[in-house]
Image 1 (spheres, rainbow, N blue to C red):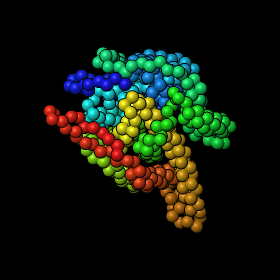
Image 2 (image 1 turned 30 degrees about the vertical axis):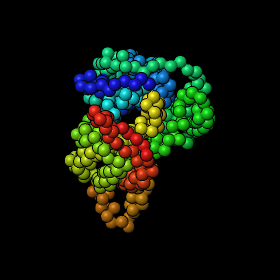
Image 3 (image 1 turned 90 degrees about the vertical axis):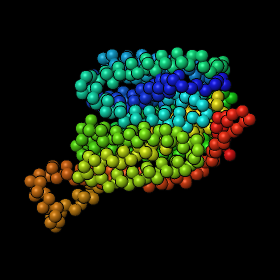
Image 4 (image 1 turned 60 degrees about the horizontal axis):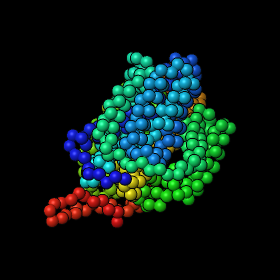
Length: 512
């Protein structure tokens, strides 16, 4: 990798803006389509289950292409690859918005996911290469804000565009953002690209990655709608995923030029960072998925008001960005991460006190508080990842860690939605057991409901979902506390100021 002098001033600000805009655009697209699926299905004359493939196609293609970022950036250069990915995302977004059949929409969503897999990892690598070392923490804080805010804005923006314009605009909105980001990146960084290297292509590794990542992502996305392992499709996808992952790990581990470099896991801090990132993100993302489900399905909120209730997390996340950016350069990262998990746990227990009578303000407040801890989770982990590898391997390492984080987010979504329904059925059965002629309170309740057993069952279901929701929030609070000891398995990262006779140099980051 080229040893370049860090950028400063307005140019650095514009580079940060451009890479953040591109990342925001890509992450936004992972959630913005979710709320539009019923509308897309209705307009294209298909079922909602078929419409789910619009999400699955993008997720599977994105999961396959993301781990290849390191190899592709070495072959073509980081700036060229990043510009190509953003331009490709613009073109495929236009094609998605112009689609008039489910077949063409799914095809272009596959292309969109495939070309955009490099955007998030490369945006981090580009920022770190151009920021002064003493401001790397700030760079990661600014980047992490996009990862936090974009998934929240997705459902809100998707609902507004779908309701007031058409579903096509959830794709067209990417165009102006992408154009600005790609032009800025190319103009500002075309003379600061990494050197392209010609190297042998691991075609077997690519093939195994396509099969392994694709089958696993499809299994996670389609599992719930197909009753999981009661379906031959899900059983088959699971078998293919396990077998191909096993073969790929062995093949790539011993390959001289692997597509996916699993040897990063020999670095203790990288291993700890990825494990904590995956498990912590499961708790974080699981709650993010559950909250709108509960608000809309049980509390009767509209999609827009559900989004407004979730959105306050972004306020303190933005406010805390410069604070966290400075702290990661001065404070033991394990302390910051421990603080984040304590706050996550407190919010989990707080949410577990929700009830069917909870006002909007009470539902919103934990989201507001959570914003103070979100960047304290993301930023130190990203720092652990990038300081575990050499500078020329940052893109590869970030791509691999981001891939696993995204994958465990899919795990979390599947687990939470399934558990929510199963716990509801459990609580519904327990509540129904009490409705006997001998139970005077139950008989009075039935009378109050006008002896309408359908209405009674509906209220029982609502109560059961409420109890299921609190169960899951309690679980996330407990599990977040359990992750704190794992954080302390990482080696401490210390910052030392090196001085010379003439001036004080940049802060050097060392792993003891």
